[in-house]
Structure formats: C-alpha cells, structure tokens
Length: 171
Image 1 (cartoon, helix red, strand yellow):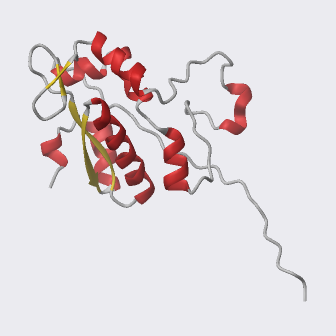
Image 2: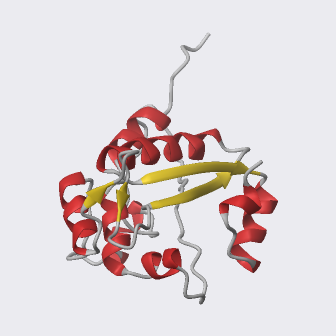
Image 3: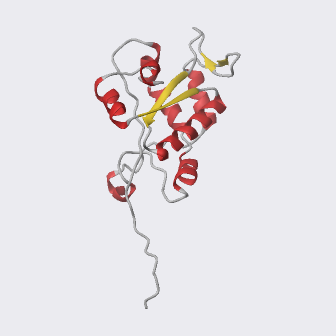
C-alpha cells in the first residue's frame, strides 16, 4: 500500500461586485456614478475577512478583475483602495454625508439616506457570506446595505436588461 499523499492544487475562482448603473437622474444613480462614492465602497470591503471567514483562509484579496496569477497584467502603481473605514467615512463626508439620522445611518442635507440593496444569487452561499461582511462593515460607518438573494437567472437578467429597484427583487 502506498501512503495517501495530500496534494495542494491551485483553483482559480473569483467573485466580483458590479454597480448596475443606468442613465436616469435618480439620487442613487448619481451617487453610484460618483468615483469617490465607489472608492469609499471599495474601502468598506474587508477583503481579508472575506477570505478568512468565507474561504477558510484559502484565498487572496484582489483589487482588480485580473487573476493574481497574471500579475504582469496588473499595473504596478494601481490604486487598491484597501479596507479603510476612516478614509471611506472621509470620502462620504466630502459627498455631503456628514450627519446620521435617528436610525444611525448617514443622510445628506436633502435628507437622502445612504442606503442601497446588494443583490446576489441565492444559490451561492459564498457570495452571501461576502454580502453579510460588506453589510456589517458598512453599518459601522453609517451606510445601510440591504441584501437580496435571488435566483441566478433573475440576477443576470437584472444586470443585463434592467436597473432593478429593491422592490423589484425583494420578496
């Protein structure tokens, strides 16, 4: 008999987040179109916690859609917007979110609450874990992120053909 030997194999997988922008002039569309807002949201992504808690430490945080094994294709000076809630809070303040409402969430001077829905597919518990971490970290600085877990086909339809509102996907 031969002893069992455990082999370590590299498996390339990724998860990503997209902002479904449309061309309407709604408050949220203007917000998500703002580069500072997107940078702030990236700074609220605790990628280390995502790797540790959802992948059992078997992964690496990424900051681009290019797989880390193709490092030559990643610009060396690329901004990473690492997890930094204080810097995220500062950027959000620059956008006018300086006060919290009675519920503890940020509002601008027009009374718009900093709230949106993060949608992912119900069949993927890993992505649901990421969503929960994102939701928890955002809440700490006053950003309310609701989550909605829907069928993958419904999610891709929303990304390709519509700009869903939370009422369109929540049950």
